[in-house]
Amino acid sequence: MIDDDRYFYQPDKGHGLPHDPLNAIVAPRPIGWISTLGEGGVNLAPYSFFNALGYTPPLIGFSSTAPKHTLRNARASGEFVWNLVTFDLAQAMNRTAASFEYGEDELALAGLTAVQSRIVSVPRVAESPVQFECRVTEIVTLRDLNGDPTVNTLVVGQVVGVHIARRLLRDGIFDTFATDTIMRAGGPTAYARLLPQSRFDMLRPA
Ligand SMILES: Cc1cc2nc3c(=O)[nH]c(=O)nc-3n(C[C@H](O)[C@H](O)[C@H](O)COP(=O)(O)O)c2cc1C
Image 1 (cartoon, rainbow, N blue to C red):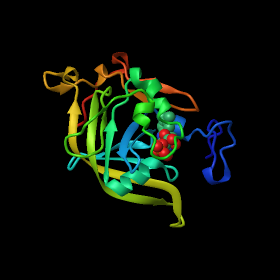
Image 2 (cartoon, rainbow, N blue to C red):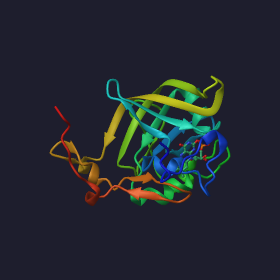
Image 3 (spheres, protein in one colour):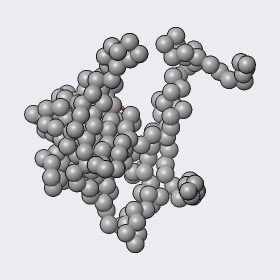
């Protein structure tokens, strides 16, 4: 049975809509605000094809949709830092999405402060309340159905150091809803804020 109330398309034949809805549907997405260190200096850029991938060991990953500076640095140095993006950092985060010349210090250009990491040599964004220091475990060229390489490259890193602003730990529990984290929503401009009123709770079945 074909349900006529559903718009259906096959992505390889085009979506036929004003904007590709994929990102708007898989939303909101957490933002990987990734700092790396290259020959020229500190690089900082947002990646919303990003997520946590495992607990033991803790793995996180992001996907670069083209060869970009972050990928180049992560490949060369084997290190990156993830910085949490909160609402008050939204404009600065957006500035770091601009195409800068390789080697320009994007952290400084966005008016942010670099702070030394403990384990890796890549600096963290001081203004961000949470950071993960990471060492690259895998860099994978993603393939299509024919097995052909696509333009997308997945960078996976193991979290080797975690920095948490103490104010976000309430009785030792990380208070996600106190962070005002922002996430990428659909279309060219939309974002979402993680606010207390967005919360509901549910127990998993036994
Ligand atoms: C919120 C947001 C999310 C983004 N997510 C991605 C992404 O997942 N993958 C990607 O390749 N580019 C993404 N971009 C674009 C990159 O940030 C942009 O190309 C940037 O210039 C890359 O910087 P770099 O060359 O210094 O790594 C995103 C931009 C914004 C504003």
